[in-house]
Length: 211
Image 1 (cartoon, rainbow, N blue to C red):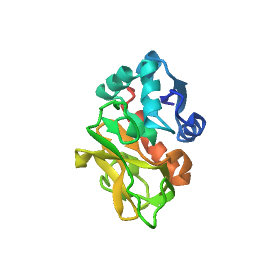
Image 2: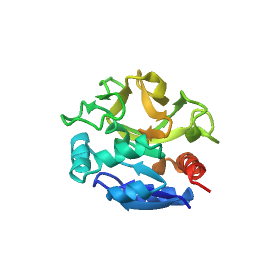
Image 3: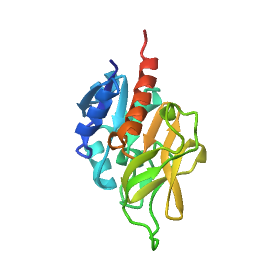
Image 4: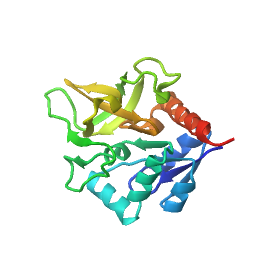
């Protein structure tokens, strides 16, 4: 089974993510070791919480450069929730610079009379990259689970893999470019749809492992 490094920087629900990866047929390895990130077949960067502490914890553990090098090397990479947001240059939630791997900013939902912030619960994805491997074997407009007050706004619209609509606002729900994929929702909390998404990611990892 492929070994997938799950980055431990004190900002994620690692147990749920690891259980999801195990069900998808992978061996998760929770780690903050740069060497183990390099040795793993793929990397998952989960995250729950605030932007500034997340990037501070990553940097204090010396993980920023290993993550950038892994992505640049072509290693499959999946960011989840806050693990998507910290890939960007900056966030309206804080003052710390993000990793800057993706050009763009993290913005807060605009208040509207009939929406809740945070956006919490189930919402339907609209695929903007319908042929992306993450979406294989899924129904059209699948329901997935969100908990967030902020959303990513990439400069390059072509990296958007899916969007959602909350109130009158249509925002990015997932990005994908080559080996780098990241989602705002929680696949580990999204029932069978989420498990299929994780299984699709694991399948891509398997394809890249030398025979």
